[in-house]
Image 1 (cartoon, rainbow, N blue to C red):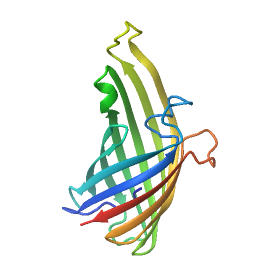
Image 2 (cartoon, rainbow, N blue to C red):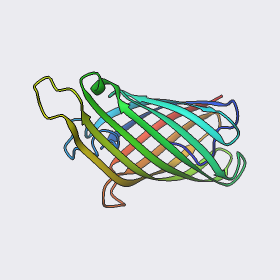
Image 3 (cartoon, rainbow, N blue to C red):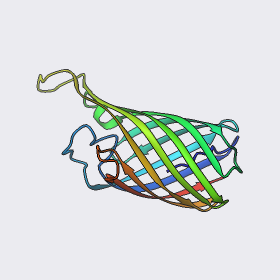
Image 4 (tube, one colour):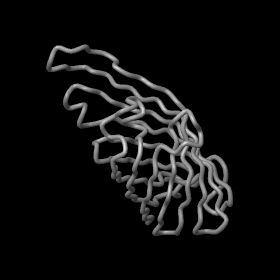
Length: 191
């Protein structure tokens, strides 16, 4: 739930969102994952390290913890069109404590159009890599990589507001590009 713009130096953004659907970090690996089609709450924070570079962190209720680096290479904080490239990576802390390293890496391309200062219409195509590595098994089960997965995906939506924002997003991580797999609504506060 981000536009192509970065925050600007020393600015901070906090967001909370709720999603429903298949989740890119958890159930893309497993077509019938336990988390499919249940609500998911996530919290994120982002800091404007410089005018064109943001650093962020995110955690959700399934204990997926992730970091973000985002660099804006087209436009500025007033441009109608903006674009940034990002790198997000993370892992499931809860699963890690029980001998399972479930991790993800995505490379998003943030594209956005800003017809007014308080409206952002965005598209975020992304490359996604997920893996599950078992390094400890209480039942002497099989160790090593259990699943790994690469695929493309995208999110698109709208963000309304300036300092207090409401965002609506639809994401797709399936083979059929127009088949939504996740719906998200969020609140974002910038200061």
